[in-house]
Length: 310
Image (cartoon, rainbow, N blue to C red; front, side, top):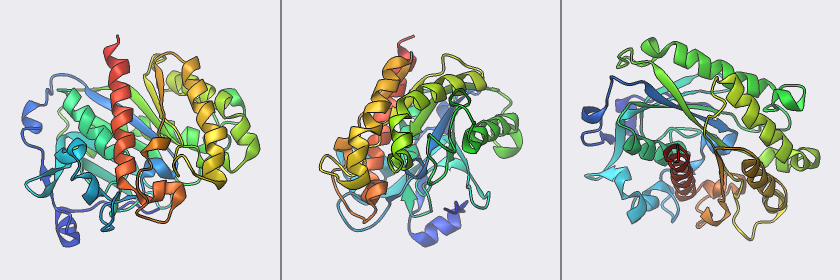
């Protein structure tokens, strides 16, 4: 899916103008390293929650809920100067970077878990926060994301490492407001699983692959205690059938079990987050931005729990 680096003019034309969060940049402590989070997975980490479908469950609907009222200020979408975002699209390599805002999902009309996750991380830290999204559609953990300890390292596993290392090595040219404060790798947020549910062998070995992925990624990113949060593959809701139903019997239990085997790791159940079905794509939470907001919220709170237990 093509990622588009939108200008303010383009956003205005689309009718989704943003306003900066009040006081966000004023409170950033640039004397301390940037807090870096990796957000990885497949299309559901890319994000297919639609901003405006004129139906319950889109982002317009979610922003009217008390829980997510902060997403709008004065009738305009909030934007975070204290939270930076970076993502390189898989198909054509187009880079989307800049301040956290809406329209950073799989396309400019969508959002993913990054939106609410980023807001909560920005609220939690006084330092600048950076979200590096490494997500591409149709990628199984048992295949392209396969970790080294499972044998035959997957290309997307390698790509995550390459992209993260490239970004942190080039912070100054990528982000003009960077003040040479350095960086700290703080956490890893994983949301993936659909394609493993389409392959019985991959789904049955998911737990072991997930444990290996966590251990290997921590080692390769240079922090063997790196906090890790998994948002489970609950798309479709409790009454889902087909692949979505099979995920509840295979991949989801494996995600929970893998998290239980790893220190400083939490798996967040998500199946109850399919509250509305504004769109047609069951594999993408029926395009419910509300679902993606709930996932980002739960993942951020789990991440903060790990970080504050030290």
